Picture 1: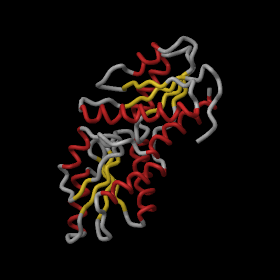
Picture 2: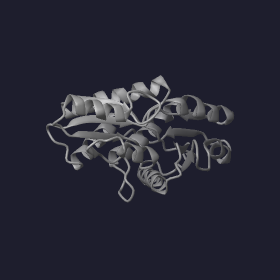
Picture 3: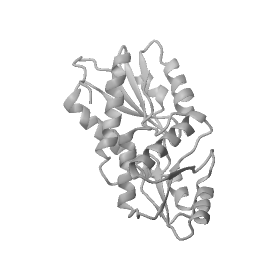
Picture 4: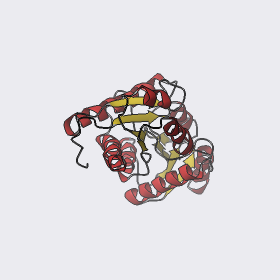
Length: 247
């Protein structure tokens, strides 16, 4: 991690997640917010951390920015594994509305080798075997940038595991997860099909991935009732500290 600023008025850290109606997803994301807050107390104690939502839940991001202390700059870290429509349009519009407040929007959480390490750990916990076919399952997006980010994450995972990884999508992009699972079964009828969930938290997409026909589906990056992975907390904190240079 980078050295934190010593200013008494450190910029607000606004953690913006998509939002979910699933209580398990809500609790998992709030646990990540709490873990980031705790991490920053030792390296940047003047930093105020708050959570906002892009959709479904409240408070939304514009409300959080409007409610912040007048004159305090803000760093907005998207709690999203890829940069698509929500980052380039929803969050950009929220920042435009916040003028003249100074706001920096960071990159999404992925692709990042630390997330790839968490995916590999989840697969190991799921009992990944030498002969298994591996599919990385992302939520999916109509935004080509988000799709490219997910394919890059798949390449990182393939390099780390030392085996091919197919990238598939639960919605909005191709190939669909169900089609990728079916193709893997056709190509390797004697192999298990194992899905690496490239999802931030439990919820609707995680449930849909269970219905795609794979033999094993690993847990998402965040698991309700477990401490958020330290590597994920590091990614979020690093995004904040790096963005301070832009303010």
